Length: 559
Image 1 (tube, rainbow, N blue to C red):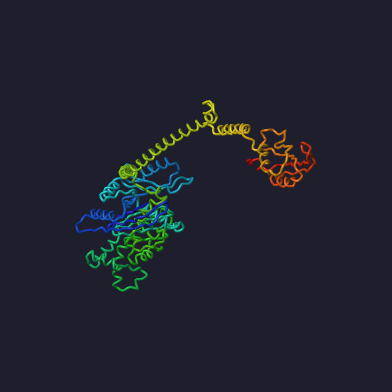
Image 2 (cartoon, helix red, strand yellow):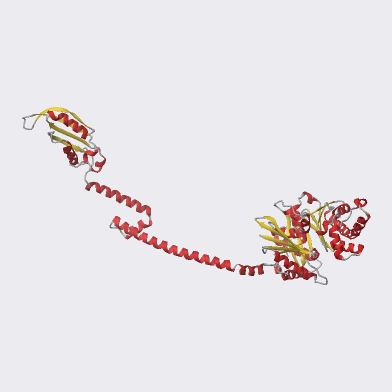
């Protein structure tokens, strides 16, 4: 977010632009437009033209604009209320102001910020101004195309800056800020994070220029150039170190500076009455503060340290150091921009509330500005819902088709099954899975009864018949193969198969038979030979028996 703080001076318009995001900020750029005065011209018109040029020079319209009413149009009070209740605080502020202000509360626009709360109550800062001052300012700025988001006080802007660049130990004694401009000077006193005094006096660099005119009888333009190019003041401690001409020039400027010192003394007395402390440090700023020797002169006159207030360099988070001129002249603009950075935004004194609030105008502007994005968003939303409808219809159709196929498959698998059972299966996958598994188990049991025996004795006999060659003449007198007689038929595939074969063979064929059977029936052993006769009793034969577990492939050979 880009925040622009604008300081309207008599000779130039200064602006500082900050980049702010997530509580962090950085100085983006600073701008200045000279106010071109002409002889007999309207000063207000010159300021108006400078404001227009300033806004036109910006590369991009800022997101927020902050401006301030001059201190002569504003008053403030620091109040201590014996309550912490929000409604009571709001009522108490109005009650206190009604007694404090020199004008009617109905003519006043005010805002307050809570500084601290404790058991004793609430400490708050209240800024107030006449409503007509806000009306006039908004009309003047509006003619230049400026509609600020926040209108605050110069005192609150300085308070925000000092709390960022000056540590708490230095604020234990009051601090004085002198912003010395061309026609006016602001005296601001700050103590422990709180504004104590803000006073505007009609004194500035113009008074020094007029003093040169009076002393040397020169035109104003020539005197202004002499002040800017060669002007200086000599502190008392250095009076003996300068020439008579230099002393004369310095003395000409000392007279208007004496008037400034008188106002400073008066502000210091007010500060002492409020805080019971004297000023501990002085910060100088503004174009006139660049006059050589003026800081040392003020330091000797007040007896306290005086140093320039580095505005831009003090708030630059990137460590950038700005020029002495930039730090001096852009103090108020930078301070204004800081008032709505991070948490300060909720605390800022803002006169743009109530009848002067910007909400109504902003709402009208936002609707116009966001018309196209809203239309685009509506089109995207319409497309999204249309897509969701089409997808929903498509998936619904697919689900219906799948359910119909599943219902058909269930009926085909289970055969005669009722519609209620089908609905039960469709609604409960676990029930369907269990029923299918039971049916499959049942079908497997039935298939065992109707399927061929994988270890058929007939196949085994065929294997033996094809294994023994024709030249080996034998008679198979005993043949037994398969499971034990007591084994259940359902377990036949898992039962161990045994075989027993008894042959009557010619003695000459015994060795060959043993060799053939040992190769074909690995795992079966012969139990020995016995003498026997042929069935007709005419020939001597040998009886040989083979028993054991036949190999698996002995059941699968084809004849």
